[in-house]
Image 1: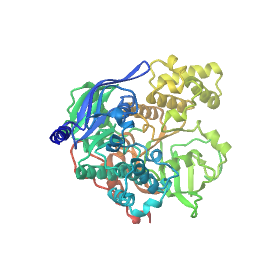
Image 2 (image 1 turned 60 degrees about the horizontal axis):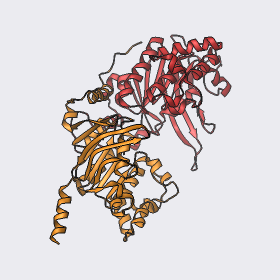
Image 3 (image 1 turned 180 degrees about the horizontal axis):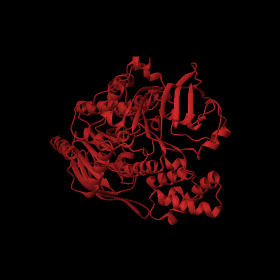
Image 4 (image 1 turned 90 degrees about the horizontal axis):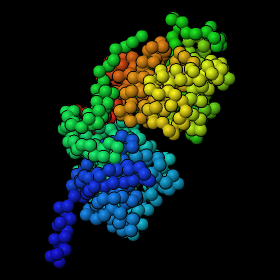
Amino acid sequence: MNANTAIIEERTAAPAIEINDLSVSFGAAKVIRHVSFSAARGECLGLIGESGSGKSTILKALTGTIEADGIVNILSRPASERRRDKTLARQTQMVFQDPYAALHPRHSIERILEEPLAIQGIGEREQKIRASLASVGLPIGFRYRYPHQLSGGQRQRVAIARALILEPEVLLLDEPTSALDVSVQAEILNLLHNLHRERGLTMLFVGHDLGVIAHMCARIIVLNRGEVVETLTREQIYSGQAQDAYTQQLLRATKLVRPSPPRQAVG
Amino acid sequence: MSDIISPTTAATSETPLVQVDNLFVRFPGRRGPVDAVAGVSFSMGREKLAIVGESGSGKSITARTIMGLLPEAATVTADRLSLGSQDLRGLREKDFARLRGKRMAMILQDPKQSLNPIQTAGTQIMESCRLHLGDSRRQARERALELLRKVRIDNPQRVFDLYPHEVSGGMGQRIMIAMMLAAEPELLVADEPTSALDVSVRAEVLDLIESLVVERGMGLILISHDLDLVAAYSDRVVVMYSGRVMETLKASELSRAEHPYTRGLIGCRPPLDRKVDILPVLKRDPAWLS
């Protein structure tokens, strides 16, 4: 018994996400090179990069869906076991970028929410469906609707509800607001912010928008061409302090289109 | 008099380049017709006009109406809808086809989807030159290379022979721009031209569009959901919501906009210089639609 308690305690102290010397190759192309980072329990960690930077590949490694070299642990267990181990699958859930593609078009919301419960053999489904819809701010009547009857923001709420219904400890967010209008983005970010705070979830927030990611995450990992170039704090982003040349360029590019010094009108 | 169809007349300094007055675009819906655009009016000269709004605001439909690129189910009515002195109301597809490319051109969001995947960049630009300018093959080839140079491609000979899947998003968009500029149109419509591009490429493409438009004295309709982008790259901004114009204002005055919708759009973005706890959420007022 004592030994068990010791193990549990050790796990609580260990990071929720631990990536050490991760490398991934597709054929001859090395897309991830010696990436290491970790996220503490309850942290919302940011991962920012442009297309081709390897952010999606890292998510795939974390869900155990690709072959990878190096250590990829979630809650102190190898992520590659996720496919064989239902418990690990339950503990790590993901929300995708495009809510139009992520929900089965011919399944009702109820069926969409019920499926993970059925796979995991979890009971009290009725109660859980009600609670999960409520937790994302959707009326209970939405359970009878189909995805095409919902707006983009409402669909993303359903996708979040589906991820949360299994009460995961780690939530992987792959550009969860990139496909949404700014006003809807604000609603979803507020929802994620509250869920993070209330449930003590560990989140990995992957994105390309510095403003969004700094809003959500106190610590941000900058990825470029498969390598971690820098780890920044939110404050460093706000004050524009980056050491790495690529990060500086990213900050400049974002701010060039951002705080809008209006150009002179020509013509 | 503006009702007479006269495809050859160009916009003079007195006639606005584009004039839209009380435009309605109606689609049949299961529960009766839906007005995707409901009473939109604006007029522009050879300037950079932005139409900004969220999805479903009718910004793209408005631009597509001008381009004559609406689905057949759409019904268009307007008190005025013209390009220069050319009335666009009731124009047949054949006549629109004559205007498109030559007098007005359009750049879409994703070059990967708008370029022909089985033709090289050069072939596609050449087609534009041959179709609109009646170039011979040799002339078209030279012009295509020149256009690639104009869109700041360093090695036009190499890019000429590349297929769309072999180029980056930014490069693809440059190829699109080169193609659209071939016939030197008076009006360029850019519908979310950088939304599919990485942040670091976005500014380059927008700078390019801006400088080409200004250099050639063209009119630009820039459609975007991004207020910062619009503030930086246009002269005037039309703010649309639910098929209607909420307000029209100078781009330089965008940060001082008074309409609650515009203010809401500006306010709900996560700021880049300070942490806010909860983001303000846009509250839509039914009165905006009256």
